[in-house]
Image (cartoon, rainbow, N blue to C red; front, side, top):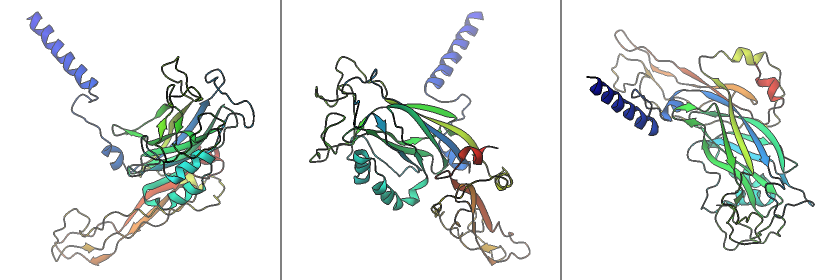
Length: 354
């Protein structure tokens, strides 16, 4: 009997170990990204970039003067699954190439203006004036825009940068509380220089976005060519920290009204995401009798009520036919959801601390 019990416990332990190794929670509860999508939550995150470009870690060709090692402004977005800022092993877009070569964001802004239906928020981190330093900013994500992308140019360099493309802050159906990711130098593939201070010789034909390693580019003149080591150390790290979740049940608007803040100089771009028109009565049943209430399709969402921080937007529908005795009553005629942006807000700490 004792032997059978030990054998049974061993089999259970093996099953649990295999389930955990496969990433599946015990008890049949399998999380997915759909949990984030269905939650209806607006999530406020902080991004912190810490750079570690030093002569000790990267002694080869370390630029001492004109200009010394530094980093451009960081330009980033939160977006849905369809947006790609850049992709490894793919050619860089013209706006991305321009930013990688010059650190200028005008072309990027123009390109993103045509993709507003894919984006939720935009953020910018201040320049880092030394090789080692840090900067931070804040941004919003939600269930349909749970990914974050950003770029920072390495200065000086021909077309080298660091960044992330489509990093998902929803993992196994839950918003990440805090996560740190190492960053390595990337080559936009548009300039053929091998060293930090190389002239910008256009690559023709244009190459692909590649990760720079201790052996790529495979040339002794490359500033990151260290054949004596297997892997380059990270040149920077980025940390995402969740600050707050705003649920529909939270009565946050009363708190927001009590806060003091400066209006942004630019209006938040209108969030014009529309859901598919509804032809039913709001109950999920599209088979209606002549006694049931019938309503129109939802209108487009109104502009966000706030140009800085947390706001709300509404959409409405109208009654086409009131219910009669024995029929289904009318559903809600107005819906409200949170919206907003941390972009260009002044005094973040004063605004969001409560």
